[in-house]
Length: 558
Ligand code: ATP
Ligand code: MG
Image (cartoon, rainbow, N blue to C red):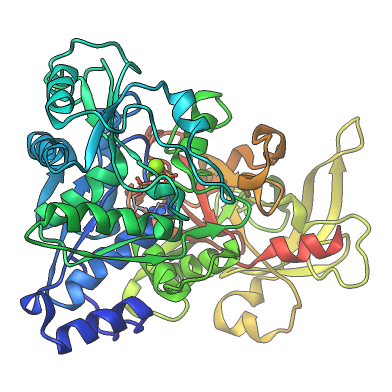
């Protein structure tokens, strides 16, 4: 588990725990759990819950379990079980005990038998449509099922036969016997078990009845002696049922359910199901597409896990839903990367520059620091020669007033090197600029040269020494702030969320980069190697984040 020195902010859940400890509750123990359903990959919303649950365990010297809520075999798989574990560890946390709700299937069954024996559950033979119709509405009470008064004996017999596979799916369900007139619809005889003739990733064909979430979750918490069961706000209305099950069964432990607001981030979605649709429909390159808000996507993009933890700390834990701006996450990423990312020069859209007065057979190795503020990050040699590449955007033939970069007759500084003046512009038949002929000032090298005031400083790469690379620039996946609420998910995808530049030129230091290195391409942003494309001769880089928040400026313009 990651160590930290700063005192974490005291959110309302930590205040409740402090009070519980002061009151001597739970024998002074704190035990939380993170309970994902293995029906997809974890996303940034889950990171909030992970940081909360594991963070509390860490700070209170408690424990946090990882529990797979694997009660719906139709949608769950081993692939997801494995991916979820990998992502939690990557985020920097380790669980105390790895648990599966399916490990409790026999105990849950025995508890259900107890409910039947005490007249608190019955086998209902209405189909799901009828059950829904008879449930009533927010303003009208529901109707009692005609099967509600089956005898205990009959219920036990039917439930046993449900388990042994005598019935088809939908023929019977087991329901709690609570109150069809309750103001809380969740308390109107909720379904506890349904028949499903589906093999389970772990129990295979041992079971053909599966417990429902509301019944499973509270009992799993109780069986693991969880003290504080933290979940998102939509479960507030389920809390009476959570408590009913545990009170009725008089379980030895009765965890306290506490709800907090889900994380919603603008311009993206936080729902496994919807993210899964993007994958299935081929809108993205898998769950780990670098544009995805999944932990695996963010890992591939190069986002450091520290930045995600910092983000979760900063947004805090509250009871009020809010849409958080993506720029908050991006700022956390920049702040994490700035002190530790080496600087390197990369030309994304190259324009050739020939320095007429620099001898053809000459080259220099310029010694430069890897980080402007941190000499401990070392130095490297950057080769300089007669033919260079600069960024096409750094040259304009007919520049507007405030353009301080290269233009005909203008002088500009090549970072770490010399000042050059543009003498001649070479064009192709189509009239496009293909090459610039410049002259350099041999006196402008090094510290002495820097004294001479030139307004623009641009980056460059020596042509002869350059590493050819592909660079992928990512933008927001959606072009509306709240795509989750849109019925047509695909229609709100940002068509420009991926730009592939295939002809980029990087200084030779790029060859020494390892997969986990994150660097700043000067003036361009933070980048890392893509894990899926590892050939040395033609590396592929992902842009993690730009240097500044250009999106808001853009939005204001349009
Ligand atoms: P999804 O709709 O993406 O499947 P879920 O809530 O159904 O989300 P689970 O796998 O059941 O996903 O979630 C595991 C835990 O993560 C739960 O405790 C859940 O409340 C929490 N969680 C999921 N999404 C968010 C979110 N956006 N913000 C905070 N916590 C979340
Ligand atoms: Mg879910």
